[in-house]
Image (cartoon, rainbow, N blue to C red):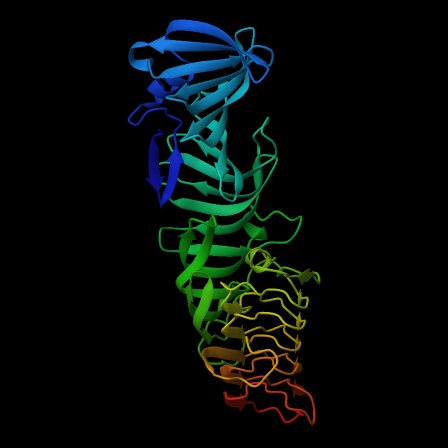
Length: 436
């Protein structure tokens, strides 16, 4: 068994072989201190020469198997692997691996066992992670290789006393390079825009895009917007809203922080220039890719017959503030009940293919989906909305509102039964006179 402690729901293995051991006792177990040999037997197992050492006293239920040629050593407790390492002429090489119930937990370096800070590679469901520990975990995330164990790629920093998340970001060569999210307290975080290849650790290189509540998704290892917060542009709020685990539920647009438009520019913007975003085209094929989509995408493309996972119920792109174009092929998003294209100030066109956002592909809707809601609102530059036949065929609500630049709406095909929003309540609200 291993000793665990918990912070914010994370279970952290300390590497003990028995419940209740202190760190000093853990080190003794790993180094086999106090193990008194009872017998050493030599055998050949599956053609491999091995030495099997048994022990007496409190370790009588443990035994060590050493492969003579390779030097690989494995310690078992009642036949279940506890940890393994490699040694040469009695000298332990590299690192060792700790197991629990026969499952690999983590790999550690022998040289770091006695230090105040030590690093290990942990076996997680989502892949291998580097864990750095002091008095508690201070880092968890990407790394370069198992030899150097340097921080590299996306990761999280934690307060070693409380276990609270401090920041999420990107590391290069063991140094923090970009801050994505910074948790000011247990209730409030600041989220920053990031630009490929540009650091934002320097204060004047940071461009906040959100301040407000958050929640730690323990399974995904991600901090998500949650509760009340505001979206930020140029240092001032442009939207306030309520989020639920990263999904915007309600929102109100703001004008330089005000609920109403005011004459003159009374707000001093950021003292540095806004982030200049290069055009970025991204293809999404499944839920996992969507979860990790670059927030700076300008053209979002979903090829035909993609994104049809049953657990995908909401398609909300409202957080992609630089999005200019959405192009969706045929037969996509079969199980999505809610589509939200709201408050996208740069969006210019939305093209949706045939038989999307519906389980009713080839015939008339036999029933209406009461959860089926389509929202296209507050996109000031949108000029074009097109969708093929049978898309949204069983949706209950279609709300299109406040699109002052809209020029074209096409749903289905002329002179044919297109079945788009067949039984839906359709609301089209706009002051534009250019619609056709």
